[in-house]
Length: 143
Image (cartoon, rainbow, N blue to C red; front, side):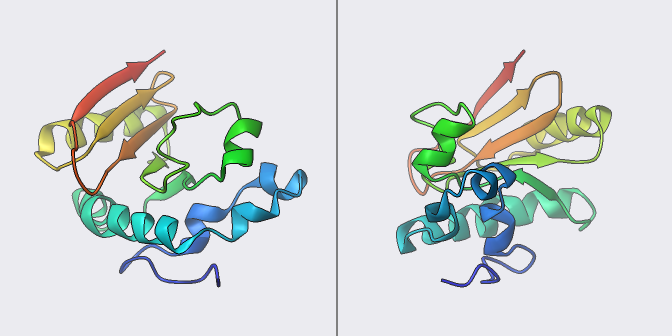
């Protein structure tokens, strides 16, 4: 599968697969996700990340962590049930902790559908996730 595949208007598969840890540890399966994972990533991009980008005045959004294959998720200390492994989550960075906190609040107050919105480590980044069904609109802070 080619990693320059378009997932939506403004997001490509490459953004969700890149990982220095996977490259360094030669976790090659990170770069060849299943069709099911790609479908979940497309759903996430079209139905949540594009809408967050609109909230950001159509400015690009930096994906700091997207899909993680199980071995990569273990290598970075991710939770075994992480939605990153399912292609349902992205960690996004708006450029600073202040900007991350402001966008966390903006997303929370927007009415957008999401499963989880997490302010991680004093706004070091913002975690968002979206499932195709059963979204909880859960808002959390991890310190």
